[in-house]
Image 1 (cartoon, rainbow, N blue to C red):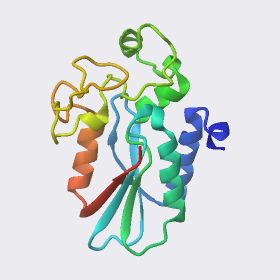
Image 2 (tube, helix red, strand yellow; image 1 turned 90 degrees about the vertical axis):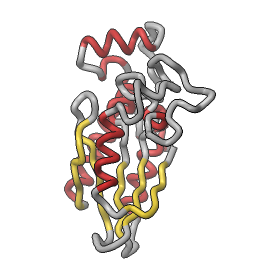
Image 3 (cartoon, rainbow, N blue to C red; image 1 turned 45 degrees about the horizontal axis):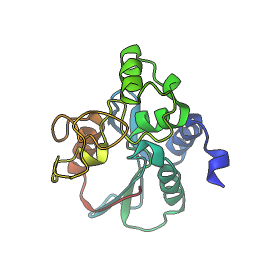
Image 4 (tube, rainbow, N blue to C red; image 1 turned 135 degrees about the horizontal axis):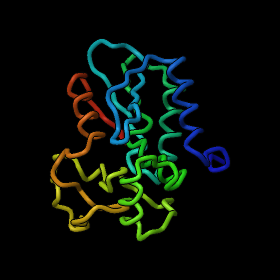
Length: 185
């Protein structure tokens, strides 16, 4: 059902524009390629807050659609922040392929990371080849599945929190009274 509607990043761009008109929103930073990172809010701003995220892994962009739906349907008094797309560069690359990348240096690098294939449908990482889910401080680099070079998945980054998307997310969370976080994958 979703697959028929969601076949191009333009779909998510339109959803983001719509949500900016309908809900309180924050641009909490920029991605590596300069895309805005959006958080939406519903419920009370007082006291405890919840956080729901999606779109961490590029190829799992269906999770973004789930977060958009949760945002639309949320009607509790408890405040909740919604971040539908943590990794917009990666999602755009996975959905639209290499032509979604405008920077020529990144294009060359990404093609090298992807064995010269222009098919990025299985890409999980951001535009620098870092798996954002592995780039957080918690047990960084300790996974037996971690890779030591950038690529489609598994590379934890050069050091913990090396990626703009994660740094911006952490800075956003530290400014809010988040008591629970739910990440859709």
